Image (tube, helix red, strand yellow):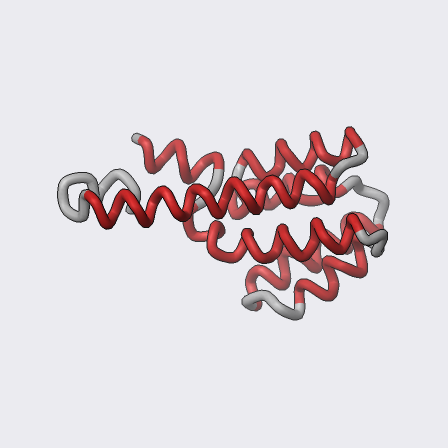
Length: 129
């Protein structure tokens, strides 16, 4: 149950990649760089499947979508929390800052999962697998 909830809001398999990605994007946005150019640059650093996703997001933005609308088709890969917080960040004009907060949250979740596995390796292995 907890795994299902966690995966819905923040997919476990995306957490390792999302921390450095969100940090780089957030810092780049806060520096005043173009979101489309940032996404295209970041796509070159990703695995092929992730690169295609970010290039599609960049293309959707070029076609007039907001960042939040551009990532909605990828809700399954990114999680509900990423999509929702991206929308809040964009609406408030603080997308860069929100992406940095997403990175902090995802990093903290990784630390908690790792610590939990170390302390309770067998008893609760099904919870955070």
